[in-house]
Amino acid sequence: MASKAARKGSSSFKLTYATMFEPPEELHTRFDEALATVKRTMGKEFAMIIAGREVRAKETFEDRSPVNQDWVLGRFQKGGEQEAQQALAAARKAFPVWSRTPWRDRSRLLRKAADLIDKRIYEFGAVMALEVGKNRMESLGDAAEMADLIRYACDRMEANRGYAVSMGRDPLKGYRAKNTSVLRPYGVWLVISPFNFPAALTGGPSGAALVAGNTIVMKPASDTPWTVRLLAECYRDAGLPAGVFNYVTGPGSTIGEALISSQEVDGITFTGSFDVGMKIYRSFAQGLYPRPTILEMGGKNPSIVSRHADLDRAAIGIVRSAFGLQGQKCSANSRIYIERQVYDKLVKKLVDLTRNLAVGDPTDRKVYLGPVVNQTSYKQFKQFTEELSEAGEFLTGGHVLTHGDLGKGFFCEPTLVAGVPPEHRLWKNEMFLPISMVRPVRNLDEAMKVSNDIHYGLTAGFYGSEEEAEWFFDNIQAGVTYANRPQGATTGAWPGFQPFGGWKGSGSSGKNSGGLYYLPLYMHEQIQTLIR
Image (cartoon, rainbow, N blue to C red; front, side):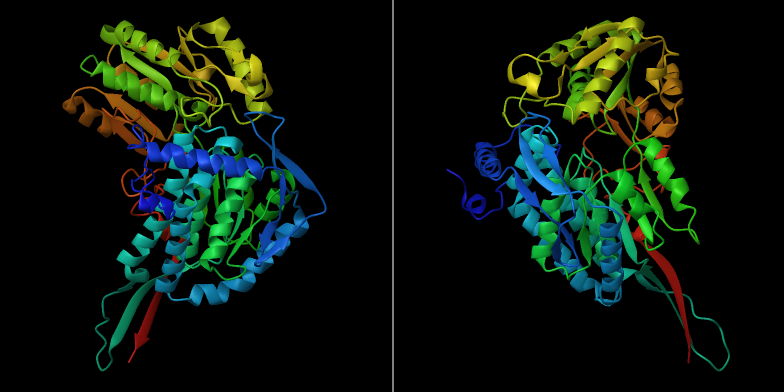
């Protein structure tokens, strides 16, 4: 029987990516209940939310499930330039009052929104399983991370008492000087979020922007408008004033382009591919003056395994990071470098674990891999595996799955590839699919050299002795690094524990989301000098 806490809407346990591998039965019961409710509501039309009002465009588009393309999850607004300008105008109008709202009051409202996410977490999880194809545990983890990212932004605002700091006093004879450093919001902030973490990677940046005093426009990926609509409802129901947040939907080529190119945007957070991120970076720089641009642009993440590693721990951590969310994580472990002395032994363990992963409907509690997100990704899987079949050897997988109901979705086998020449382009190309490549190395120095020889620098993992782990931390070029972690070789960051962000082509700010230095990115400094 569910606990009293669970019946009231909260859970009697804490969900994180590191702790959800042995969940209580209560979790499965409540997920199944939410899933049944969500399925009964599929097919509804959802409006945008602009200036606190439900807004409809001239056209709508269908949000279909990658699990089964016969399932229409909902109909969403196909917004364009007109809706983009309405949303920006609403955010601009709301900014003066919101930015002058005491930071304690802003924090209180954002914490209320995070509490609503907790109460609705199973609805979020069920929607994401259907909309993204995440298994139930990863879907719930995404929603839980969203709430914690919002709370962590509030934590930092409160710990720094609104970022107002007294500075030194000028030695002015006959006068008294008061100098204060204050961080203040920029204005209207645009959040463009990806399909793979539609909750955390919308809630994290939007929560930070809002608690800092900015007003926001949120535009989700066209594959995941429903999840972000649920977040918008939490902001609305928490009592955020009209126009402080705005939720718009539609193609990147129309409403997305109109938002990015507008001079009404004072700052932007984008999460997505390197090519699109760099296009935004260059386009945004064409404004009247420099504006903050926070980009997270993917990774090609290595794990390095020493001859001294615990191979059982390495195997489970690598497989979890290679094939969680079907490899559609910017932090996925797509390159595996193993010292020759333990290569054969570890590869056998990796193959055995991978072959035991269940592929299918992600709402089924026994399933680990759901479908890839859309037809484009499905076609890319077939193209990449065809290319890899000519270059190396499939240890597992290599095929799409079309039998039975799987033929109605976008299901791909988890694929391990060996023997691919080191100069092959796919060692450096982010595939964003359930494909990982394995290679033996002579020694750790070789592994480090090839790990760093890439323009990405997001996450990296290591398995070996503690002395070797210190060497790894000192030499690897990545923003998030893990050593000897069974929960995930390269994945599983959590706000306040493993802040998430990348170096080089993986990120633009050099500061990690969910960490000590992220919130100030959403504010600029003013020095206030008062002479008495």
